[in-house]
Length: 259
Image (cartoon, rainbow, N blue to C red; front, side, top):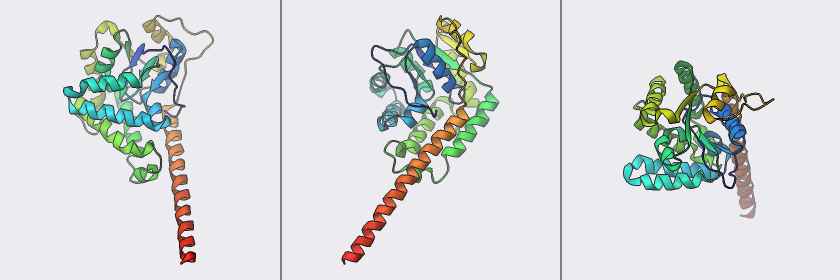
């Protein structure tokens, strides 16, 4: 998160399904995939928070149809296929929770799950939840066309995680259940677990690519990126509130003078 939203490229299709949960190095992983696959990567966190309003709205539709059950599966697949056209990979949530659907849509894509110590992951997720669950967030984001839906979007994500991992709010057990779920649904020859701290070699080996020459493995600090994104949207929201209230004030003064 916190980067610029990626732009789809013509004649590009999903080659890698990033099955790692948020806070497992997904931003660094995405940057690495952009280099190896030579195409744009759909990092869900970045696209929904830094992309156009349509990004978050479409994922809300996808989640709503998924939560309705198997009868809406065709709609889920259709919306997802349209949204991911022109990208070489998808990473982060909710993509990581749609692995069965993504494997159906992209049958030749490799499934790579970024991993992290479960306890440190749990602590990191609690930190993120603490920032997004502050009482004033919904009000601050209200003037922003896409981000005004962020809290509702988060609630849909929570409902999906609860359905998959049977834990609310998600904690350490959700992490271990996610890994077990992947081992159950993804063929062993198609599933790779990858720790971004290990750098290029294991990732390149999994994808059959050469290690990039004179190119250090990208290291993106997810915590700093999330903080930057949060501050960016809070500033935007407060600015629009200030402008809106100022216009209301001017209008009231004008009406008083008129009457």
